[in-house]
Image 1 (cartoon, rainbow, N blue to C red):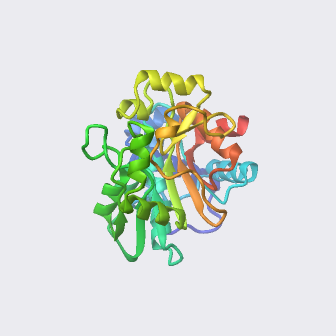
Image 2 (cartoon, one colour):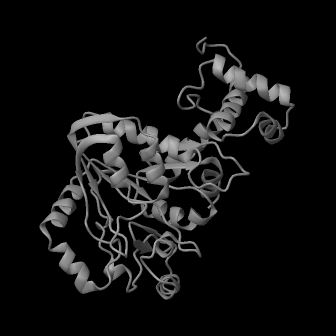
Length: 318
């Protein structure tokens, strides 16, 4: 049975939330009942309603009113072109739950859009998880280019380099960047940038119609530290310089300006500079990411955002 006019909106909202918790959040009916403050039988009926009303397919296909409201407010507050807000599971510590599925849908639409000729992607856990949710896609006329290095400090393939996962899912021309995210020295970075293959990637990246990036925090579990691109001393130096987050390895302060630190002078990634015709979308959620998200939104570095309810509400309180 399809959705029809006149159906109780609140009831469907509850069904959509229960469906999300069950099919995407992987909660049991008992857990759903506890989180929604209802009986197990009521939770079961809501999940069944989500299915019978066609809200649940491969993705949850019902716009929860609160998420839509948050999306509209974020769009207005920060002048965004596109914004997707997904439900939050307050008991989960995952930084990709729900976000990966929503970002995957956004990425799929961009890939299938005939206007998209070049799509540029960063790296990171959330972006990689989003790409893993993609169905097989054939877009032979589209170029996909990596914005950041795909080599780990030990010379192996970087663990969270999204370009390799993209190549598995999407039939298109893929352009790698055979370099680390952060070079060992300024001289090494300059030498890498002289290579024709990297110059080609830089040129394509600057021509991209659509850009997707993750955002890293600079806390104790900072991705740059955990993945071995910087050490504890360098992380501390970034913090002392006022850095609150990083994108593609580029560390910035609360105003969204790049900090004056030795690490930034060794970043081998494409600079965070695109024209107004390029839609740059950031995928991020959670308390650790908030300072960095506030910075890039205030600076206007991004025009697209995919996040969750909790983070959206926190951003609007800033």
